Every structure is written in C-alpha cells, then in structure tokens.
Length: 127
Length: 88
Image 1 (cartoon, chains in turn brown, cyan):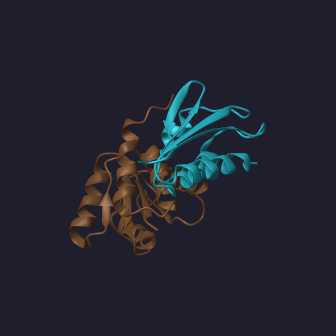
Image 2 (cartoon, chains in turn cyan, orange):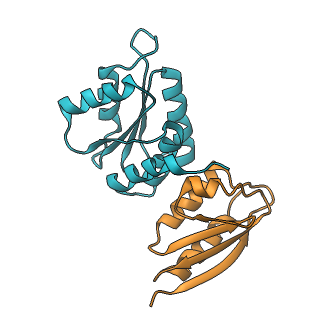
Image 3 (tube, chains in turn green, red):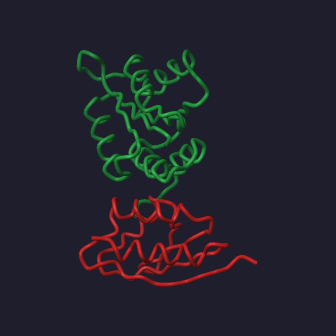
C-alpha cells in the first residue's frame, strides 16, 4: 500500500492528523507524521521528513502532504537529495488531502491514483 | 453495452454517514470498475470520492439512492447496499 507522510510546522498537528487519517482509513495504511523541530519548536526538519518517508515506504510509493511555506521547501530539498522516484509531493490541502489519500490508499490504489485523489481534494466542497 | 443498475438502501437508525462509515463505503465502491453515484437529500455524489460522499451530510435513517453504470454495476450496487446495511 502507498504510504502517507504528513509534514507540518507543528509536531502536534502532524501527529493529530496522522491519527485522524489512520482512524478513518483503518490500520493497514502507513501514515507517518513529520512535524516540528527536534527541540520541540515550530518548524520543519529535513531529517524528520526523511525518516518519516523511510518509515512510510512499504514499497508501493509514498505521498507527502505539507502545511505551508517552508514545509514545502524542506520536502523538496529532501526529495532532491534522495529521490528514488516513488515519493511524490502532493499539491493538496493538508487535512482533506491526507484523509482522502489514506482512504484511497487503503483500497489498494496506485501511487498515481492516491496522489490524484489528494490533489482533487482541493476542489471538494464541504457543505 | 455496459449494464446499469439502481437501488436504494437506508442508513441504519444509529449511523450517520460520517468519516469512518463513509470511508468503508468508498473503499467498497473503489473495488468496482462501474461508475457509481450515491444520492441523498436531493444531491448526488461520486461513490468513490470520500469528500463528496461526506458532503452529502446523510444522517442516520436517510435513504441513499445507488446508481451504477458498467459491467459490474449489479454486483457493485449489491455490495454497497450490503455495506450500508451492515453499518453499526
């Protein structure tokens, strides 16, 4: 199954969203948080992102979702250095994208389909 | 010519179509090649899209319409009706 990585400036936010997506999608999908800096402050950290990608990767690819600004730069930086071609940064809203990606992954979909579903979440109306 | 199939199923009285049941519904729908629409409260959603199914806001006891088009339409509708009836 395609793994999911949630990157946020806040470690609480990343962990909370990983929990939420895991509750909705069920236990089979690997959803890993990468939030905050090692000293506990707000920010994004290359090593945390790299480790989370490694943990989420079960061989079918990984979709990475980011909150804002430098989170995207951090992920791009990590992927530039260590891309093995099956880790994708999705251009998607964080909460809706992560939950959607997790559910689509739980149905056994491909990396391409999981990424597309996360990105389509941008246009979804809530009401 | 692809088959078409329609049916209706009512949500159990204790289950709103919130995130977890909706995810189970969508996962079931994704197992079929047919295109599937689910309707409630006069609106219709792609049964394979979690966010669009959630946006239906279907409350417990609501009747959902199911419509599938494709070779496995009948099996898909049957599986989805079974999935909804089994929510608890």
